[in-house]
Amino acid sequence: MKWQRVVQEKLFLAETLLRSTGGGDHQVEPSKVEVEPSKVQRTALVQGAVALILNARASLLVLIAQSNQNKVNEVVSLDALGQLLGENNPDIQSLRQLSQNRHSWWYQLEMLAAWLMHPREEPRAASEHDHGSNLIIAIADEGPATTPADLLGLIKEFKTYTAELSQRHDEW
Image 1 (tube, rainbow, N blue to C red):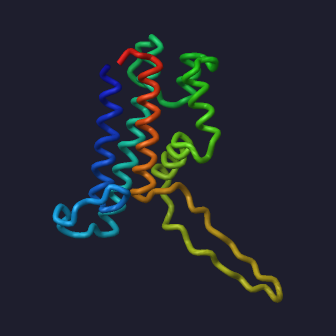
Image 2 (cartoon, rainbow, N blue to C red; image 1 turned 120 degrees about the vertical axis):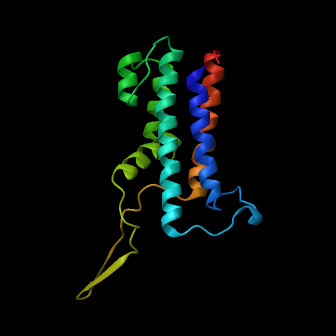
């Protein structure tokens, strides 16, 4: 099926970008990396990988719609897919459950989508303000995990879900 190949391709390209940073659990061989990427290059690689992962997510939504006999070429969100297939659809219920678990790959994708649309500066270290005898510590919101290792782990979970979806539908 076309959309399954699109999902797999986008995840493969994202993995390739992340591995080129020299990060993650799949280290690039030193002879294959000419120069350590600069901070700007690393940021570009991570944001490019995140964009590819999010593109794979959009393709997954189309894949699910088409697996359920809906001939659409674009589904913009899980809510839109829920309206198309109905909230009682097992695929929708599965993704809704993942969207409620802040440790799931789907939840992390939602955080990454928001981060990519509105990237913040690097998280600031905790700041301390001494107001007389009271010490107030403010910790900045850290946002989504964007290290290559974290993103490679997310991709692995995404691929596992896609394989399970494929087995459930047995159409690919």
